[in-house]
Length: 481
View (cartoon, rainbow, N blue to C red):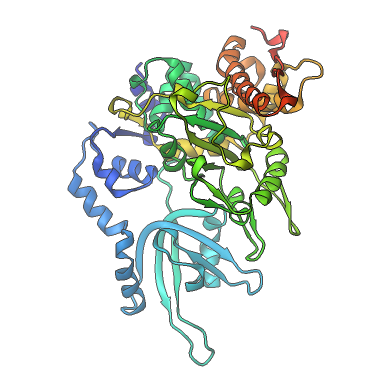
């Protein structure tokens, strides 16, 4: 049975025909991947063909653009209409007043201009309290101002219907993996994130590419990737999963961790990872504050400053471009990083390094053209796998750690190996479910290499680390099948 046949057989409604070579139509719309895939599934025939006019008409009716917001407000505020459309919504609950409000980030509607009345909240709260942003069909109306009580008019939520065009069943996802070989599963993963597996020259390139998914599937994994321009860093970390955040420009401690003045949680509380794009150009507000808070967070997952105490699970990812002459782990590759990340104590808290030059520059043959998993479904499965601690327990059982091994090194290797195990072998339930040679090749060896590069760069920046290798972890003899 071919991979396409297996996908259709085992995943059914979660499979869609993607053809990004000719789907420039979707690129112009700037739709998130899951909406794109859902529309394709809705309008495609059995051969993957669709009518552009039909999709355009549907989008015009139910997925308005930002430019249409003034018209929508006019219908709500002055025409007193109830308007329904598909968008993402974010909820805020006031501790002082108990008032519940919402924002529509894509349209610039803020919590100051909105309200959710108690009876409506009772009907939809279960759908809206589980994350920062939730996609769904909102129905909006208008609450008129009360001049006597000096209460301003607000846009109110009338109803909300969660949008989820697939079945969430993590155990099924795990079990179905048994029907694919490792090589086939690599191709399934690449298709799910919009890449054409046959466009890669070899398996090593494929494995390098999926390394970027480690923070999608493992909590608080901290990575650095330096890569040539055009290898798709920004697209993968910013355009595939709604659970991640791609940051650029200026970053403050308040935005990243906690805003003391507003008493609002920052990015690390609300996303699976925060990826700093074009890290060489990123500006930090008060680098010393950022550095001291990052050290505690990256080590323990805890946040403590200004009377605020908390914990979060987002990974910290640094993404930067690198010139060809600097693609050498035996030289100082971090010379252009912001000063905050050049301190060895902070750098040591990064678990691994991704050699972005092992990932080919984007070209047409790497764009998916065939049957593949719905991107949103796949990313949701990875998000749910973050909560499963059994994989780390398996890694702890499998690996033999030498005496006096550096704790940060062993933790980094185990954490990365656990991420690989979840990505490539989600069906594994015990150490005996995975072949020791496959675990070594696909999980342990790449994890060790990724940590080794961090250690080498530390040695270049700080003589305290010079000449120190990472410990050699091995598979215990009883699992050496």
